[in-house]
Amino acid sequence: MNIPSQNFAKIMSPVSRLAVVAMVAGLLAGCDDTGVGGGAKARRAIPADTLALMESKGATRNSPVLIRAYKKEAELEIWKMKRNGEYALIKSFPMCRWSGQLGPKIREGDRQVPEGFYAITPGQMNPNSSYHLSFNVGYPNALDRAQGYTGGNIMVHGACSSAGCYSMTDEQIEEIYAIAREAFAGGQRAIQMQSYPFRMTPENLAKHRLDPNMAFWRQLKEGSDHFEVTKHEPQVNYCGRRYVFDASAPGGQRLEAAGACPPLRQDPEIASLVSEKARADDAKVAELVNKGVQPIKLVYRDGGQHPSMSNVMMVSRPEAIEEAPREVALDMHGRPVPAIVQVAAAKTPEAPAPVAKPATADKKIAKGDAAKGEASKSEPAIASREPEAETSVVSRLFSFSPKLPSLFGSDDAPKASEATAPVPLPPPRPRALAHPVAPQASVLTAPPVRMAMNAPAQRVVGAAPILPTDLAR
Image (cartoon, rainbow, N blue to C red; front, side, top):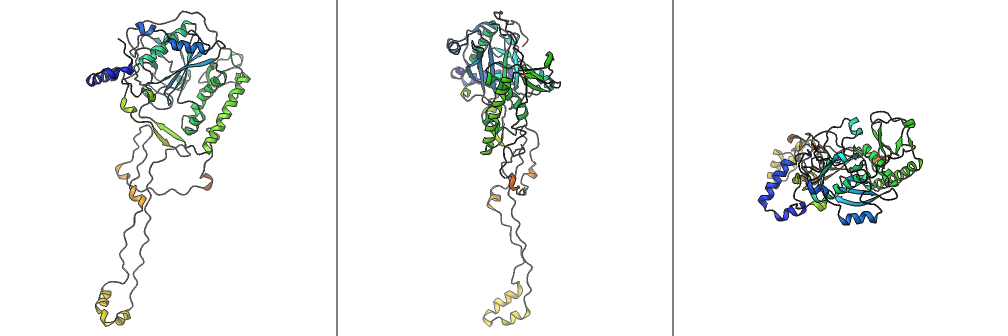
């Protein structure tokens, strides 16, 4: 019996739940996707309401598919090609689990969900997955390999558990798998998957403008802009260790990810539309920065999930998503701003030296004040004891100054002896820097000039689905 993950928690006893959690933790320690038995789940029909959505958008069950995923928003979108060749959004699935931080996948075992443009072919579909159903997204691509990035077996799968994968519920993956399967049956050779850290909005770009990944994210935004302005699948290529979109080299010259980019040809109409969108978005980023939008970095314990999935039981590392990601403020140089700065107590001026009392002073003391006069002789009139330093209210409240730990867990936390050391107040900033303006070169960089796109590859219409029955992954 196939019970949807959302209903699991309602029918199981607490003891059974603990047993399942322990079993899943061992089984889903990584994205090694070896499994047995596909059966009916891999042959599930596309739901009738989803087919109705396709029809309403001018698409069919066999028309090509494009997938877009967003880590920060934890959403996975299914787009289908309409009869006029443009893509329309059919459905957005809340993501049950993703792992790692915002930023690209770099090495095996870093738990990062990759970011970039990938191709899913029929041979990457796995009906025998240990994670209910799955398909490999195709990481690493040519650019990842040119950068020296390692790792593999990155899937979109079920079971709501992630160690670098895009994880859905079992019910969701059955529908997504069926949509992809029918597109391959209709002749689509490869499904493009666009994976982003977040939606490429001016608001997100303004908040993350000082993140060290921003140069790479601007490349991804360029590809996103190509799709947004044309609603056609962008042709993805690589040269100069960067992505290039809807571009080709003259004379059919082959582009290589690690090689320098030759002069590129691009359709001038597409280039104009993309440049116009980039300028408008950059102007909005500058406006938001001037309004005081603070640069931040989101730090996750280990990825996240869509809010609507909070009641799903079968989830990897539930303790890591009990709290929302930390929003770390950055200074104008992209460095974390300490949450607490100890105010050094003002040093009390030293008391003046005691003044010698004239010898004739005691003779003028009245007879009735003789005792008082004797006391004056034995103790100076002005005390020489140094008064206790007064502590400000802020210093009493914040009597420590912890050093901010590294954003990624490096062991640079302060020692116990350093935790209470006063931090001198920084010198006042120059007036010109009191209200920093929007960065120009690092954030608001116009996309490079490109010139004519190659015609997209012809689809093979009517090809039979290629669904392997015995996969290693």
